[in-house]
Length: 623
Image (cartoon, rainbow, N blue to C red; front, top):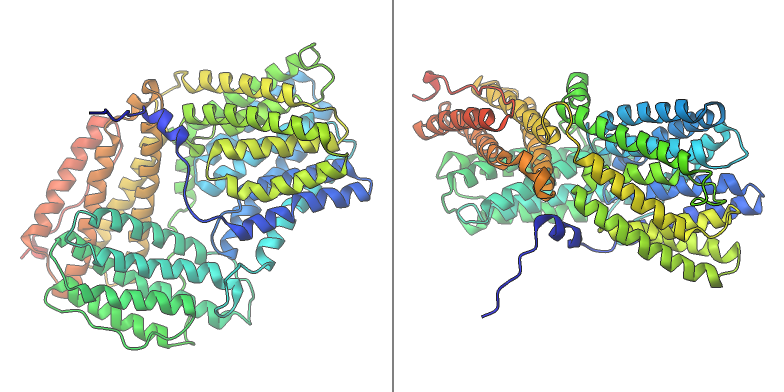
């Protein structure tokens, strides 16, 4: 009998790739971005500015993920603006500061950008581009002034954003194609509700509930952004917002049914399925099957389905904006300057500053030769130190393997391609491959390596594959060292910080439900924030668990705290639905709340997670 070989988590993560369809629309945009920009600059005899614009388009292409157009404005625009600022600061710092002051400046930028990156995905992208562009500005030999470089950077990223807003997505034929991402996201919510209803009494219920939470987060992000057209699209926007709002009570009722764990009729999922099809086709719903009204949660589901049908039939009316994330300045500051932000900021500052110092020290040595690209070392370190790209060991392995592969592939192309025509075509091909390669960090690294080396040669420098490999391996060693250094406070501050944020969100949500407030919009917004912060905490825990054992041990036990929080939020949702229907809680509800609150307090104390003490149901509610 053969034994199944189990790989250690850090190695298994490095070999795992994301799955999904090829993003052909993003591939098309990538092909039309960096290559054409570089060609236009070469024809205009402003090659160096074209290289800067192509780099910006490449970085924007890495952030060009599936979703709505309005969400893309922030996801692409905020990092691009931060990159332009970094390029400006780096250019003037490199021109007017000696090596030591420049290193101190870059270290300070690393500290600030690292703390900001802990706030969220968009902030992380902005922090990364700020530092990468600062390193490029400080070290890239470009004759143009800093403000010209910054404008070229904005133009490169802005061109990709224009393509994202203007080009239709293949297959988007229902209604206004500009809202295809929003429609798909809202339809995904109704499909996830139906999936959960089909599994309420089975083992798959917890996974389906998590998938529903993810779908709601995705739809919320897709709808909360700038208007695409102020007047002509107002009816379509109101309709989409109303359809999303109608899904919230359905999701709440489905979660309550999953919490109860009692079998329900199969026809209960038919209504949400038809609603999902109506959203995708931008059409009416037709007659919807009504579920049984035997228990409070089923009555809530039936009422929510009727209200959804009414919302779908109305094409006009008052707009219902989706509940926005409840993350004010205080929460942002807590994330940036809390334990997680401080730990990440210090590690980024050490990696970025040390790599800049080492690179400048090696700049005039024989190892560097005549190549003028010492900025590669700190720029590489920035990507390697990012925890949202995977566990540290996985990032290092994938970066090293991808760089070696990309450098060897480019060396072969450089020997046969004409210059600059063939290299410009290679840049265009790599730009198209970037969105498809983002599903695995090694593949993305290989594509980006080929693209960057091609840009270097178009800019007039010699072939640099060997030095690129050497600098990447040096950056890998540096980041591995800094990643294992002890820091003030505890290791795993980012994980505990996100768990603490999830605990605060759960506390606020539970307190609102037990107050018997009639503001359902407020309750839905609090519920979304509780589930979203919990999902962020779980993602951070999963990444930490896949680290090398020396790092993974610092976050042991946090998964148990997250599991208790998840059961508490699910129970709170069940309480909210039951209170709406009956005006009081059962003994099962109150007992669950009390047990989970006590378990959460004990778990938080045991594993160093600062979760607030949860309120329990008042006696009058348990009658």
